[in-house]
Image (cartoon, rainbow, N blue to C red; front, side, top):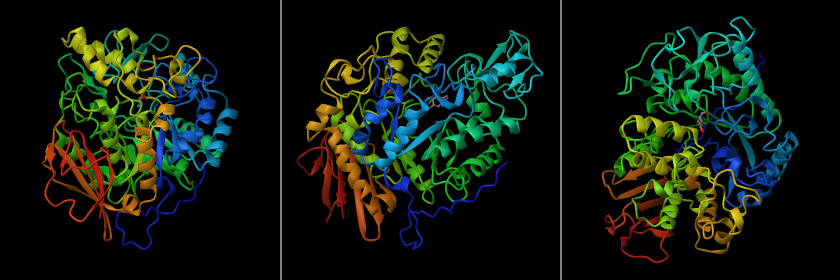
Length: 567
Ligand code: NOJ
């Protein structure tokens, strides 16, 4: 293995008195996440492509971002829209070519923006040549590149349930064995215990570093280490146990991750953000910061507050605001010595305006209120395409109209669990990943200007009013609010480096927090209800209001009202 030089140690604390404090480029600006399939189609195919991203670079730049995270664009059968990869170092022709990619890197660079790739290293596609070879016999050179287990055809080795539903084991006729898949059947898990597998993965990541990428988002990384023994887990009512409970964050995982860091990340001016559901706050120092393996970690606690019972189809109609605040504050506190990615949306989540505010809330006020939190918490803000326009959830009629493999699986489980079609569809409408995947709305022309063909997923029917072109013209739009706030955050030392403190924690109506640097303070306050709420005494004394989602001022909070004050 190649020896790599160490990157200079992280020193980027919220502690402003540190003279040697170093702030990295990825802390100074936001990241914009693109789901290329739904961004802009330049060929009429109905799916977005890399040239579409190149075309919109000036738009993206106007949001004050320093990096674009692209969800997977590699060769893929698209069973899970690119998270099932069949070649780690080639671009899927549906998205374009390697030349398009190089042009994107160069054009983005000319605008001060870096491109961040998605590494999906827990599993490949079942059409990846590695898997085709592995499954062909029990004694081929790649025979143990995946997780194979003996068993009787109709009796899986354990009761583990895949994240998208069904058994996590799939029978393979050729080998007369089962293989493990944490996600879909078409996404077999790689065997990280095999050094050749790890080497091949590191080589692929280094291929993209050589092409000039600015970092990586690392998918589902908590699942790469499997337990030494595979045993049944405590069963839910259907007799199965989520594979997550049995394999996430298995001891020994850090050995793999430290090697990954040494072989790929160290010595390069890149950033890494890992998707790491279930890493506990007390474990964070091993994962992020000076002695951790990644620069940032996406954890799920604040976006999962509406699932107090675990299963997504048993969601809470209304979550407790104090739980949401508690989750955000816990992350802010736990990453005081390191760094945090702030996000409310991504390609797996519903639209935030439908989730974090009660039914009946004004969507434009809600989008602006969330933006105020996004840009004033401590960490790098991640904006998901369309969030900056205030996109809302879509609701397709039947489960057959949904593309999302996860919604389809969860719908089946919910039905088997006794929910009616209407109840199961309510859950799908609210939480389907397709809510985030409807095409970008560029203008009010046909298909919102996304494609001249037939869009792969229907365009949201609000596109005539909610689109980039109209919002650019309207000085009070969500888009212009994002642009102004983002520029303010990028230029504010207090917001980049200041310490976080939450006020009035037990209040179930308001979220109020401060950021402090020396004698400067910024206060963010949001009313999460649809009614008037009186101002807690004194918090704004002597402070000047700098942002609000209402144009005038009252001495109380109106429905969904949010304000930022400076002291
Ligand atoms: C997490 C990704 O964000 C999601 O879209 C994907 O389906 C799974 N990992 C499996 O790769």
